[in-house]
Length: 144
Image (cartoon, rainbow, N blue to C red; front, side, top):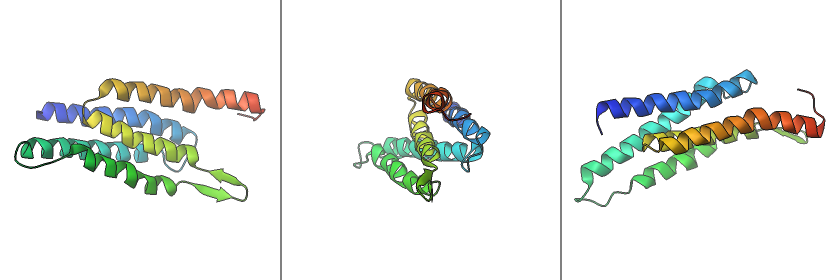
């Protein structure tokens, strides 16, 4: 992989996750634009590093690039858990935690060059965050 491909993947990661983060920011959530971009960029860099390590040691050592990536998904749970807050009977932050988890997954996908999946996932997440909120509010009779 050349330097241009690495840069393209990092920029793609920032742009796609930025769309998710912008939606969260517009709804005044604690984890917004910058947080989503940082999570995705970190995940992309970790995936790129995994691929790089795999290429270096291919044939001379047993290296599994998916092992490092699986640590990202586990670790992001701790960051997401910090966004979840309980107010009496109500729980807030679950959607933001889920969007952070998806931002990490987007970063991993872009990092390994799985652009179609990353683009499709971004579109589906934005559909879920923007349009399904309106449908839920109409069905449940909530304002906004």
